[in-house]
Image (cartoon, rainbow, N blue to C red; front, side, top):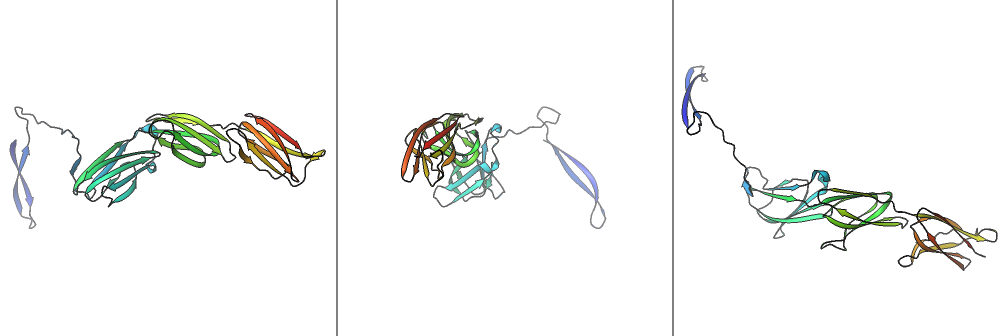
Length: 289
């Protein structure tokens, strides 16, 4: 390293000229008269000095195709001794926590992952997650209750996500096979098996096929215009009640399957079994005399 000097004329507060010498330092590379610059290489750091009050920085790596919203990313920070617990929302929160050991849990949709870290006062501890998730988006022309059941892994057979009364199911899951069940308010159901891939969007549309049923009770040569009741049972997978109309006629929309209609008038019952196919209209007439 060489040292050079320079002189400058300045005035003090009394406007008197002063001669000031400033030492100029220049770094030169060894064995060369040309100026050289060295760029430092960043090294992995667990904890570094910081003048900020924050001492814990969290982050998560996500595939851009997933389009994860900030509000969908939740963190839970819990001290090992149970003396501290907080929740935060965001992709990369910077926090101030007491010194100690913490379990940090990341949640995105139905996905969760936990890591442990020790945090010191006056040091910035960094903890990064790589979320192994895919996005599942399913739509239906009718509002439905949704239920997602895992088909593989430790969660096989368990319901991992559910929602009610919506036309779209949109959630994040670990990669694998899932059974998706959609149930309409009128009892019509449809299930479909779907595969979720890490870092990808899996999209599907569920149509939930159905057929129409018209119930008509007659008395004499005309409709039974008297107080009466119906009970309609679905016979597939056990006998289930799906409708209980209280008039002589009723219009229903049902899932394809086997059914029985029971009409009751003045204590007298009449029964009729029938089958409904997808996209069909079925007229069920029962004579009550």
